[in-house]
Image (cartoon, rainbow, N blue to C red):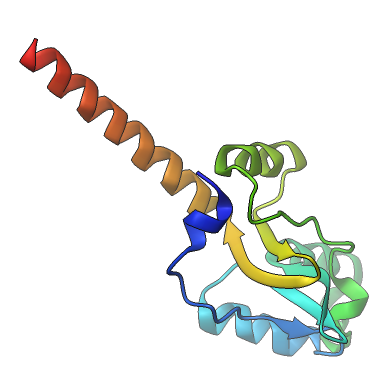
Length: 142
């Protein structure tokens, strides 16, 4: 299955922020929406990702003063992205190898979705459960 099929039917609203957004405002968005990361845009193009890890690293390095910085100053950049035609298991492998939890789905220069490792793991578990059920049914009917 491809990333495009996985996100098919999901809301097209991508919660994001701009490089000029304050870290304090971005943290508020993460908390209110109960999400772990935001794609960050500059001039309508993906510029980076701002995640909970960025908050932790910046707090450790700069203390509470980091809340006054802009997201563009602290985000992870350049963003690691995935093409909609990428196989879900390939994307999951990439996330595991790179130790990241979120991938913007980019076609050309347009962000068409945003997937988390949770989305991909859920797909994998559902697939394993389905295969196990098919195997049980086959064995019982033999």
